[in-house]
Amino acid sequence: MSDFFDRGGDRAYTRVYKAETPDILKAFVDFDSAVFASEGREIPLKYRELIALAVGITTQCVYCIDAHSQKAVQAGANEAELAETAWVATAIRAGGGFAYGRLAFKLGEDARVPAHQH
Image (cartoon, rainbow, N blue to C red; front, side, top):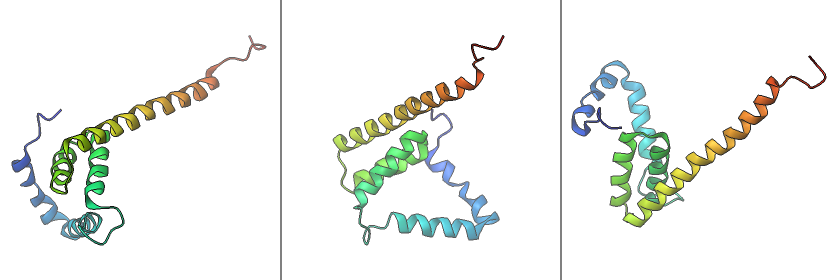
């Protein structure tokens, strides 16, 4: 899952964003900073970080899991909260399979030949 992951080395490639799209990078950094501001939000930072961790687990983004698990702990999350976050992500991902399974049944009906046709 993380053979390609190099926490320190991978950050060096931010230089491409800085060189090629500095305006977009700045907008993203400003946006991310606003979303994860330590104060001035209704949802406490710890819970926003746990939400971000759950999304990272669900999308299987090792970079998100790395960053937001650490930031969640720094914001006061404990191992039990990390564990429950992982289970929430697991339930949502499994729920997606359940829901899309129903869609497969629905769409599969289109392939059925009506009984009165031969």
